[in-house]
Amino acid sequence: MRNTLRRFALFTSSNRRVKKDRIWRAMHTPSTRPVASERLAATRSIQDDTKDSKQPVLMDKFGRFHNYLRISLTERCNLRCQYCMPEEGVKLTPEERLLTADEIKRIFNIFVADGVNRIRLTGGEPLLRKDLTDIVKTANDLRPNGLREIAMTTNGITLGRKVPELVEAGLDSVNVSLDTLDPFKFQLLTRRKGMEKVLESVQTALDHGIKVKVNAVIIRGLNDDDVMGFADMAVDRPLEVRFIEYMPFDGNRWDRSKLVPYQELVERIGKKHPSLSRVKHEDAPNAVSKLWHVEGWKGRIGFISSMTDHFCDTCNRVRVTADGHLKVCLFGNEEISLRDAMRAGASDQELRRIINQTLQKKKAQHAGMMNLAKSTMRPMTTIGG
Image 1 (cartoon, helix red, strand yellow):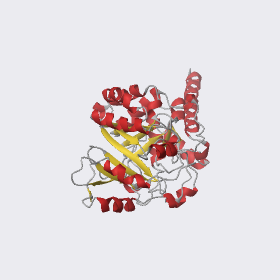
Image 2: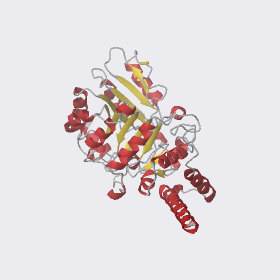
Image 3: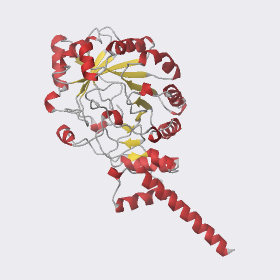
């Protein structure tokens, strides 16, 4: 009898070790696989089910609490924006290696339970995902658990006809990417037609009462002459126009000379509109946009200065890519696969430890625009906008 019990105990212990090792191997991509000593230390941490940290799961070593989850639903896109991907497109992840609806739901549940109150759905183009409305409904069910906002970033091409069902499902706001108000230039920038559809979608979203932000990446010599036209969109519409500094990603041919610093744009707009003044952002201190207003306007304008005046010290965002990798910094190369960990059998508690351990590796700030320009990073469409 004693021998039988001992063999059973050894068998159970062996199975537990195999499971933990399988999870650990699965969750690391080859480019981020740790050295042996780090692997051993982390494995011991995962295996110790009795060791509970008093630190919140979503807090990093600098005391930043991450209550904003951005999750990409697809790598596919129906545009080919120059700052986002090369003209020939990018090699897409096979469908079976993308997150399923059930896996997305599980990620939602874990993050919201640990303090996330804002979820943004991104891509690629999230509207290309056939089960998008169901995913919005899944997130909406978590409002009793503390979720306050469900947002989406889109290029707006097909948004107009889908706004009613998405709003009914629980969508609160949309960020619409639009980089020019000139049809010819739109085709040059996106390598596709459709600017009129995007403008119609913006108005349809406003008509349905959801918050709308228009995001424009400004590139010197290409669309910086559209700045005044974009600003004027906020004169009689209750929306926010946001000017984004051009950022370096694989395949977008970033160059320092093409970057238009936000201060230059403020001065340019201020000359035409002297009452332009800075206003406090309702999302402070974690807001990424520096918010400004002109007296008498219904809308506002904002500036996202990721390159010339970063906001890393108050960052509260984490990203999950369409293929299930957790990225704690947009400009960081370190990734951990939550997808592989889930498919290897990780429990929710094990996933929480993986998330927390990854957050502890988040740096105080990104490397700076010139260093970023020299580094190799995923194209933006495979990260999630």
